[in-house]
Image (cartoon, rainbow, N blue to C red; front, side):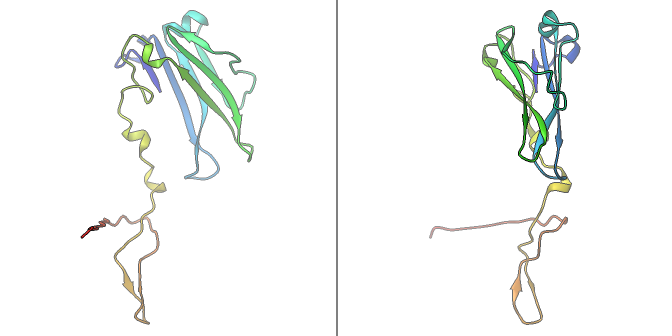
Length: 155
């Protein structure tokens, strides 16, 4: 999620925040953070090994904001109405880090994280089929991908 400075290996960062997210409640339901690790030399200055949080362990949350250089972080536990436990991470002053910031919250590419897994993609074919009564129907969503094009004109 965060790597300061950008482009440096995790072992050599000043601040490195990793989150393990899982789809819970179904294969394509919302994703929830289940583990968060805050490491790097700034975290090591505060506690050996950095900070590690698990959604199932409500005892390991931060009650206050933690400073790492000029960046502040806070990890809190949450629970959905259905009882799913998860973690939230809050970050302040990331733009004031003084170095380039990598990761999802920084300047790195977000394409992979923003792309739904193939099993979660539904498509609707706009190529219709005519049934025996002569009615025209679009086909139902399927795993097969059909190129779709829509065109409009204001003329």
